[in-house]
Image (cartoon, rainbow, N blue to C red; front, side, top):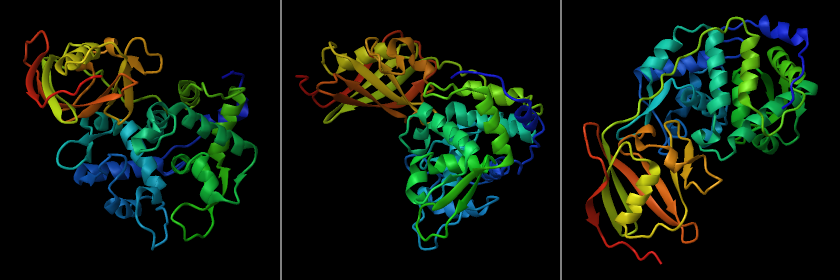
Length: 390
């Protein structure tokens, strides 16, 4: 990503941009509408926690500034409401909400972060949402499989293409669903970057005829165009965020997110393979690499192969913690203590061992004892005979 000098025209346009809860788009107002609902109601989620539950989508949509229109006969699913998928993504990535644990998944207010949010002005709230989207907006959070860095780069490139000419499609139902994707379009529209013209359609998906930049969108993507000579797949979102912040005089405050303290004591896990399970207790200061060896020992396996843990963080993003010989994982298992992973009771994750035989251990955290003083792992219970490794 090569940097050049931006022209005064685009810099001045961004500096003079007015931000309210509905300008340049309805994003801030709609987020605050949903946050107010979460404070007083239980907004249930799908079982996979990737969207609001289908039976509340129509009601939530009606409360938004510009409700999305779908044919009356269409089956109501999250796909019908890309605006709500986009808003859900931002509610999660903004750290203003958490997922409540219990019988059914639902969104809860993060009280400390929300208290800070309410002290921000409209420009600062807009910037926090924009920054959250660019830094943490992994498609996996909403059940989509696109690569995060590629997804953000596609959105930026799409905006730059629209800077030169309006984007027109004769097959909006198909083309825009792929590039830049309905959720990206919805967020860009809510944020006031683009105007969208749709055909009258009875299909369940959006039938988009034309997308053009708003005045704000032209100022923003013009600034990007003049500042960065080229945008590649190694695009660094922080550079764009800094550019935005530098030229918006009303954006001075942010939400301060404290570092999470490491859990102390011990964890009790249930580890299972088909037909058998083991209950293991380990000190919270044990690394994931040590955890791997405890699991292998409990099932009478040897440890001569590579492995990877697949663990979702609090946002629903899967991180891969692998053997130190792996070069395709997010992080190495021997660098992370169990107490640093923000695990919650009931959370499930996987250990994949021996990529030839592909053993998949299902792991569930069943208890956390913060006062425990144990120094080493122990097997608390065995059920069923372990399978033969070879």
